[in-house]
Amino acid sequence: MMYRTRTDFSAPWCRQLRWLTAISTALLLGMPMVMLARAPDPMPTSYLIGIWLPPAIFALSVLFAIRGYRLEGHTLKILRIGWSTSIPLNGVQAVHADERAMAQSSRVFGNGGLFGYIGLFRNARLGRYRAFATDPDNAAVLEYAERKIVVTPDNPQRFVQTVQSAIDLPGH
Image (cartoon, rainbow, N blue to C red):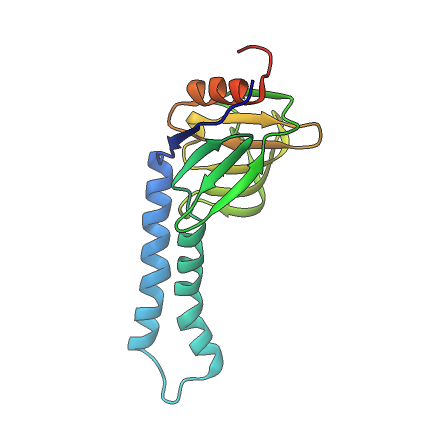
């Protein structure tokens, strides 16, 4: 079955992500203001780095924030602000919703709560996986032969059905 339409899913934020983002934002934008108010004259290079690094981290994190997900043909697009990450669905062996998929996870590399849970994670349930998540309770897992990807669309069951239909997986 050739899947030609596109289907969008939103990426709702869980309460923990809202709190982590609010606290991190306050720190990343507040620290430079305090440093500027107490700046020595002249400012050493290390002091300037301390002033500019937190807002740079904030801005970079905003660019990678997840706005939603789009299934388009045989591609999953992770929608960002002004761009998207494309993940081919070719090779998906299974897809399923699992609200516990991210439970007890450790971050290997990535962002653990500033505008999303994005990067490489590990836990006993999935092993090593790549996450593009905003609400772990809405997790859907895409399983490939060599990797796993976790996304958190607003309706994981509909997401799973749409992916199964798109790539003609059994169970649809």
